[in-house]
Length: 228
Image (tube, one colour):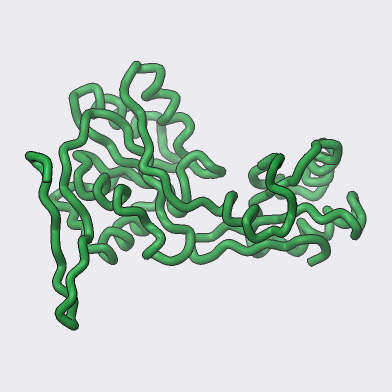
């Protein structure tokens, strides 16, 4: 094991042991961390290492990240989790960039899946890049490739359209603009709006077209191919 690195071994109730995480030195920079979209066990070992080792923790939902760390036995060790989401002021991002400039490592996680993929993180990423600071990623689960794998549609060419607009007229306009795109179309949608979204799609594209609709949530990822 490299100098400055140590591992935490947790003894199981039945006498077994499992390697939970390693506390490792991290260079100053921003570390995007992919977190599970369903089972907490879908997290990667590297993601746990980063969460255990970063000087500063930031998250879209602080409670979700705290719960995930508790499940995997990763202690805060006195660190506070900074909230950074779509409604955060610019001051939060400026403080995180300043922390990196001062030599600290900052780990950022969205509520579920990968940051920036229909989740916050873009402005932070751009700010760190414009400051000439290091930016890297501990990749993890994402509803997008999961939906593609489950959709039963071609995956050699696809277009990710994110979330469609809430308003019916705007949603219709968005679907019309996407109509001629070659390849499989992938959307994220709230389970509460999935029926209305599929109905609008069928009205505009007809029942024979089968674009997949992905519903993203911290607990699961589902698909609706063709008519709901």
